[in-house]
Length: 403
Image (cartoon, rainbow, N blue to C red; front, side):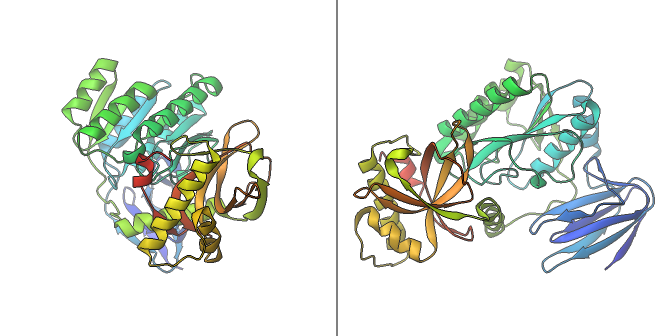
């Protein structure tokens, strides 16, 4: 177990899986003080910067794929810390704009911590359906904090909504409607509480600009932080809505992830939200069923399932004995199901499950889910997952088609 001595002002970057315990001194992670009584745990495929505010000694451990690096100076730009001071002068709504792997979530966490420390509470609004931190991938949500936290992925959503895909691109309207529901709910439950919003990483092209314009009109932040250059069109939108914006540099050390690494992170998250699943058999007529396109006709839902299973089997050269939606039983035997979204008796999004059986003739469906209470509504998606959370197949084309 390495024991690292850090000079005042220097930074220890830990790459997960890893943990750290402050032995002496004073250090923090994105504005959250490091404790001498509780270990900081860093999950696989993630990293955390531990900044020494005084000469510090830290005990570290790391597993396979993890590691550490000592950097001279602060990896968090000075501009970030000044911006955090500015937005926390009064209760504020602030959003972070930036491309994939630009450091968006780190900045959003720093701002969240500054607001929570100053006002005793703050909201983390996670609008990134691809790399969700607090809710299952393909969904967005929010949660509240009462004190600084080193890593928002420790948290679970307090309230969430379904987008249905790991990018807003094929379901932009659905992403916006979901964001609108979240912001309305925050307004009802946390009036006047500060918000740190983490936008999605879709920034290229005219569609991305239009999408961000709509998001800004929904969230109505007081401040907008852009990691890197903010497009002129977005600047104009900010000026139109009276949003103060600032362009900030990226952190001096960013862990760039390959597409395969981002996929692995999503799979870890799926697994987290599918843990302790049980198999439930439920009459189809007991639940309000629909597809992501809003189709509610059971026969058309069955057709959607059939097309999805057939596309999956064709891509993987599988020969299925069953035809129609019955093919889902065969892929279920291989430990694969259709990612589906569950709503509770109050109509609130409650979690995910894997649809592994659908039989219109016998009026029954089977779903693997950790949610054990009454299911009022279920949305059947277009992503196939293994029971371990591995992304087996996704079909964005079906989202653009009617069911």
